[in-house]
Image 1 (cartoon, rainbow, N blue to C red):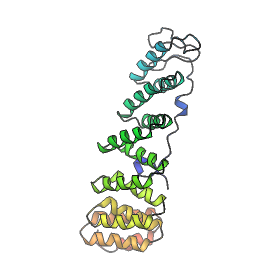
Image 2: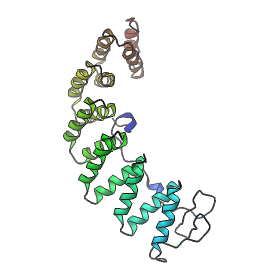
Image 3: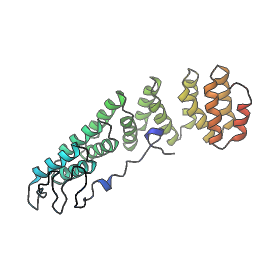
Image 4: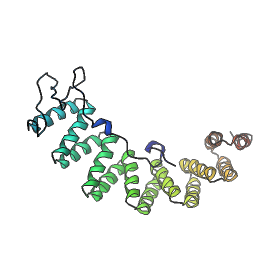
Length: 261
């Protein structure tokens, strides 16, 4: 039961290994950057090699940084790789966090990875929580995964439920996912139905999804009928579509014939 953050399910870290692989020599790329074989800057000047070859690290860093800041994504990953290679992990983290705060999800994941490797998980949690609380859904998703990885699932669920009850649907989705993953589907359904009775449409849809996935399609239909009878025809239409997508056309037709649409 895994989805990416946009779908509200746990996700694995993105594969960014291809971005830190050595880049080929050759012109024609925006913000042309140096390579292990001796590249050139965007104005055609030859760039010094990394340490161990010519030792001109600062020039390489400056060129990568300039190329990255003008839109060359590969240059940014080469910059991070170089920082790590020369033992300047803190600068890599600072660069990645800056990129993450502009919406770069891969940079966010990598920054947290480096913080964990540096025994700074608490710092990562604080940063992600702060980002999530100002509306960064990627940070919310990454925090969920980090707490799960650290065996702090209960802490994650408690925080996510609080966020969900404050009106944040992404938090609700992640809370449900963690509860499902840890064998607490019935608890999630009970919570979701209570949320649905307050008018939370997202909770209603998730309740139906869990009911269907746990083999309680009839209960799912009844949940939606109750909502429809309370004046929510939009929810009924969503339920019909959901039941059809889940492979329950008879239940969907039964719901459609109720005549509340």
